[in-house]
Amino acid sequence: MTSTTEKQENQDRQLQDPNTLRELVFNIPEGIYITTPSGAFVDANPALLELLGFENLDGLQQQTVAELCVDLDRWQEQHEQLDREGLVRDFELDIRRSDGMVRTVLDTCYLVRDPETDRRYLYGILIDITQRKEVERQLRRLLVRDPLTGCYNRRYLSDLEARFDPNGAALGAIVVDVDHFKRYNDEYGHAAGDAVLVKLARFLTRHARAEDAVIRIGGDEFLVVLLGDSVEATREIALRFSQQASRSAPIPISLGWAVRDPGEPIESTVRRADEGLIQVRLEERGRHRRRSRSGEL
Image (tube, rainbow, N blue to C red; front, side):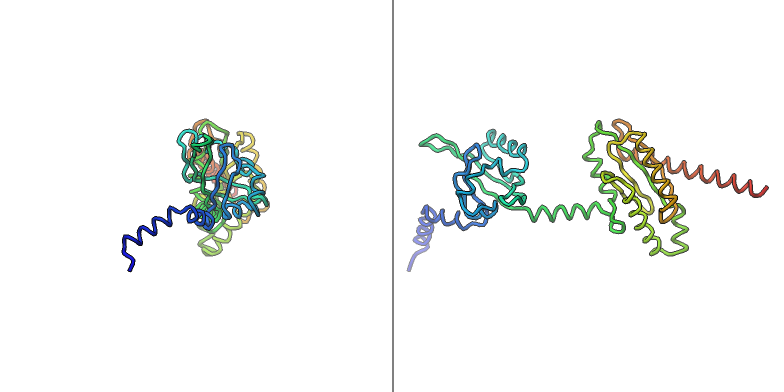
């Protein structure tokens, strides 16, 4: 019988056999490659050829890594890290296949110097994470979307605040609120109330510009965010919403607007727009009371 020690020695010999390693590289499902530092392909396993859409190594060698990368700045960033550290782990890149499709990959690679020729090579492995990234994008869309109306929700507003440059472009905010929505719900029921909110969301989206974001910030209150708009433009767009609402909105609405001051948090701009809405409501009630008194005389 073969002893445990002999079995271990046999396994060690197999692992040290170059043919065993070649077979492993040939059959592994992840893409393995060797390139020069400038990005010329020297060798690749079948999984890499399949990932990049090439039938054979000769076809792949007609391309360089830079030509396959969607974002050259990102590729340059990876090489700067390689020059500093000699190793890059799980570096995310978008690669364009030979058929034009874009795949997202994680690249782990390291620099190797040939002791005989003193030439440098990159040894690396690519893992395709395209499907995972699409699932992540779908989850992010669900997280920032209101399930009833399909508009963005407050999480989107928080994300916008986090990535917005405090000293960057102007931002306009138009707050829209349904008039007497509680009374509408009491009279027609919550199902009818939900239905009218969906119609209002469609109305706002239809009359907003493609670059604007329509957000349901709570209950019957919506926010239209305009990026890069001046005071005049925001005022004009708010007026257009108001005029269109008087003709085709599914339910009466009121609105207020504001333009972000330099360095002001977006939430503060929205709060000022909401205060403008409250002022509109107060003025409307004042006019209504004056009309009522005039009718009594």
